[in-house]
Length: 220
Image (cartoon, rainbow, N blue to C red; front, top):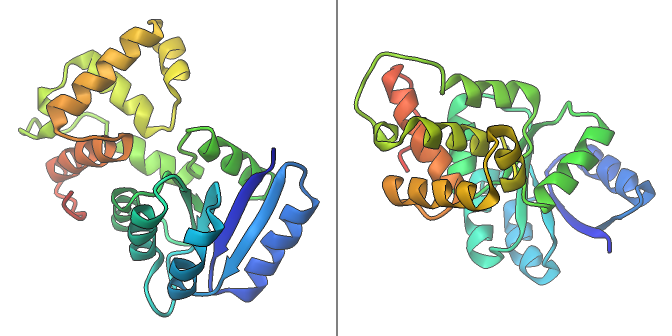
């Protein structure tokens, strides 16, 4: 079956380019194209796409707020940010709002298709520079009490894998443990961080790490 996609972007040229590319790609179908958040919030709940490609900078409501509202209206849709912004603040806000991936618009078409497939299958694709920013938050810093201090060393490894978009099987393979063990680690991470999803866990953890370095981002 085809992966269904809706596009939210106020750049008409980019929208048309993505639509034409999806038409020629096997296994994809574009359901709707929206130039504003208002149009998207009105149309996407009826489309019920598998994946939404979401711009951030739009004239009415920005793509981050549109993401937050769409996740309430169509929680099963996977939202993949497609934007020119690569600053830490917007990355955190998008993840906290419910985005499952974050790509820069300079991504090439083949990588975009791979990212759509990945986010649909439960992954969290990110452009290289974005993934680097995320990983940097796990580098050693000044010891300070934060949310992640309650996690064991192995739980921190698992959470780092989650932040990099690994599926459960990939985490199990990387760490050399069973799927049941991976699920147990993730359940304990959720319990210790008082969260209910991968995105909440990653943002909560990264929030503590960023405060250790004096950086700021929206509270979760």
